[in-house]
Length: 134
Image (tube, rainbow, N blue to C red; front, side):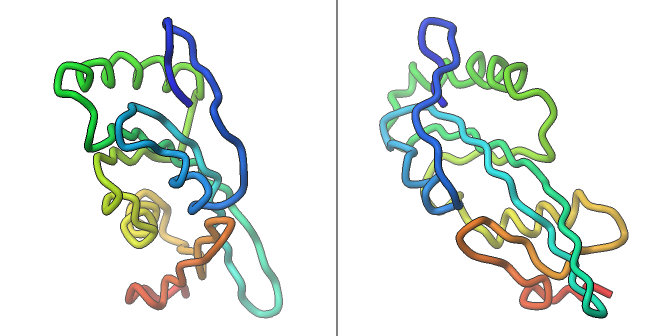
């Protein structure tokens, strides 16, 4: 999504974290939302809880004066989207990291942690992060 002339404009749709992050351009201010599912698999049963993450992208090649527009655009996007489960501010490709996001989701979740997070095109197992899902 981009904000142009005070209007939110969609620029891409798709599935998966890699697809979303590939749409971010280094010379633009953009926003994205991804549905990440916390999957709990125990005793032959599986449950899925959706979390929506808003990504606020200010590309590394954005001119310093244009970076100021990111604040007002961020407010418009937040109003447009309504409630999301979390946000990630990203200024370079290295900030777009599934492991960082999974840790953020763990911190914002309840006492009962899922077995893994499904990003639509890959998963992060909580056991790989040193967490016990039990």
